[in-house]
Amino acid sequence: MPIKLIASDMDGTFLTANDMYNQARFERVLSEMTKRDMKFVAASGRQVKNLQQLFAPTIAKGYALDFVGSNGAVVATSEQQLYSVHLSAEQLAKVIDWNAKNPESAENIIIMTGDNATYVSNHATGPVAKMVFQFYPNVKQVEKLMAVDDHILEITFVWPNDEVQQHVAALREVFGDELHATGSGFGSVDVLGRGVDKATGLQVLQDYYDVLDDEVMVFGDNGNDLEMLTKYENGFVMPNAEAFMQDAVTKKAADVNVNDGVLKTIENYLGI
Image (cartoon, rainbow, N blue to C red):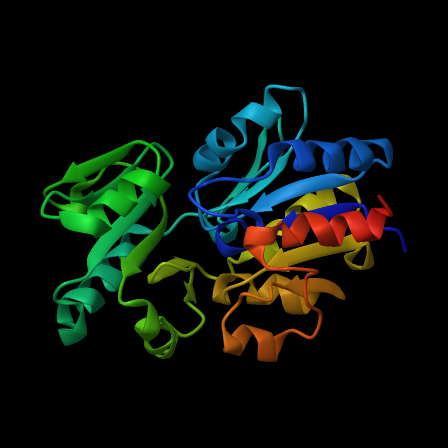
């Protein structure tokens, strides 16, 4: 079946570095996709607002993009939000309490993504705090996270990158199916609502546009991409991804992210 929807992770996948992408090349691809009535989806651990800011130059030229943000907790078209899943106050308390009792969490940072803002402790300083302000829009530093008056989409912890998978495993063992924990790059471990991942987010768009699984192509490089990469036959892992991802996904993108590997693969499919 012809592809109708193409979704790509951002960091380590679509973006080359420092929030950059080959705008001219991307817009040539989008123009051809538009002729064929194909949709492009930015599917990321980033918030939808951040993704919209990222692609503002392309959107300003009239190109319509769709978004799966916060690792699937929010889904939006270019015109409207279709879906969101929030953590309950009880779930937030459980996760924060677990973190407080975890001896390996003494020096990590907690980031809470809400509908209205991103919240981080006012004790956060240094490189990690700088990263938060770079990747999250409307960051507010607060004294008590549980006192925040907002609907929370996800909680993010930051550990050394080589420890991410062990912390994901620990969270999954503690919370089981009640919550979903996943590694999201840059040492981030995200905790989301039950069953929330990029694949479930993409399913919302598939239902909205009437697209079958065989008509979807996806790209990713990290643990938070695994569900969508393994769900779809046309799932491509980046050659620059870590070994555990290379082992889990058979198909590889045409090149690494810094060489526009996603766009090359799409161009090969489109024959341009």
